[in-house]
Length: 131
Image (cartoon, rainbow, N blue to C red; front, side, top):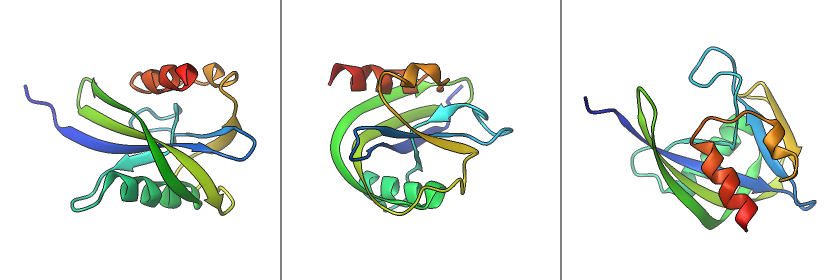
C-alpha cells in the first residue's frame, strides 16, 4: 500500500530568553493532545520558509524569522508518510494565542522531555540537544 505523503514545514521558535515555543494539538484530530513544534502542510507553489511563517501566524498569531535549517526527517505513520523540514526560527512580534491549538508554552531544552510529542518529533528534540 502506498501511503499519502505530506511535506511539512516545522518551526523551532526561539525567544530572546533562549526558550522554545511548543503548542498542544486540539483533541480529536491526528495526535490530539500531543505537544508539537508549530508548523504544517506546505501548499503548492509555497517555499518551506513561507509555509512555516504562514502556519505559525495561522496557529499562534505571531510573526517569526525563518533562519537555519536544523534537520529533515522522513517518517512513516500507519496512515501517512511525512517529510518534516525543520528550521530554527526567531520570534519577531505578536502575542501568542491559542488560535489552532489548545495551549502553548515557552520551554527550555531541559524541560522539553516533560511533554509528549508525536514520534517523528523526537528526532527534532535529539537534534536540538546536540547543538
